[in-house]
Length: 402
Image (cartoon, rainbow, N blue to C red; front, side, top):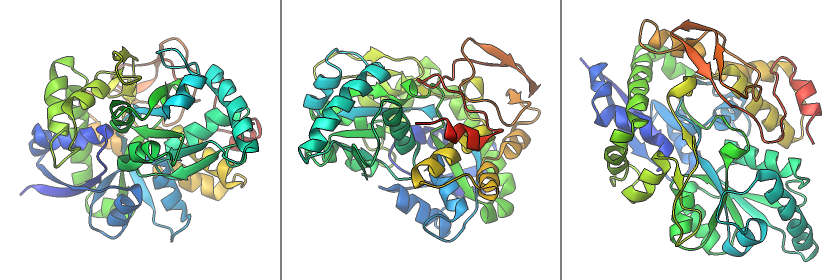
């Protein structure tokens, strides 16, 4: 008898792997049937998950940590056995602002764009009309990446600029209506803003952190205890879907699947650009290639590194205005579950890191690392400011930030 799981998701390209695992039969091969519930906001995805309307969810990684810590609601521990991908977001500005900070038809250098923006932000604040950004949720990597970049460029979030929440499907609308001057969102919503002529893509978040953790599969710990075998089946099926996803021969097929009304319900051509690491910067231009815009499968991209959860925790603390708490830090670290990932893929053709944490941002040239299965080489994972995150001393890291 087949196991069944219901997966909550938002219409974003990085929801691809569970969808493709079902459509291509990888879930069925594992004895698993997946059904999907599409929502319009991360808050609703989370509510469905916590109230038992779904078994697992496509989720922004920091929200899984905030939920496990009981921030703004009762504590509900979540487990993350699989990362759905790294990178995949962009920063899109309204046309006039984009031309002021990045006049060339190219992705801008983060520091150069940030310094130009800092001057504009000071003028706009003095005029009583501060620059306003839209992010998809307070507890999102979009919010933390944006803030990390702004702060390093001398722009103090919440003082020099405003940051508000806009669900991904409405991000282009908010830009078109002038409610925000810029958005940080996943695909296809940056490209939709460009296609509508209401914005220009200025940067990819991969330029801020080259291997930044993005969406994950999140499961309530109570549901994990009940359906551990099914969750491991899901991990294996998604791993196979990831291998299929990165093969150029499959890009058009997968874009067409994701474009179906029950999934993203969008333009297959726009989705294809994201899958193939191509971005249309401005309306009327030609797509440019940005390698690893949406990083999948390779280099243990789906492995839930505990150090990634710890970095997200430091950013949560940073922007909540608190200090590192050892108990909370331990809770945050336990959200990412490399033990489940390893158990699901043991004995399979999949490299498994020997360590569960690493110094983030420390790799420049390709580096072979220890593994308990297979051979594993990791490449550039740098932060744009050259900093490194050592998870052994969270307090010292926070103290080093502007």
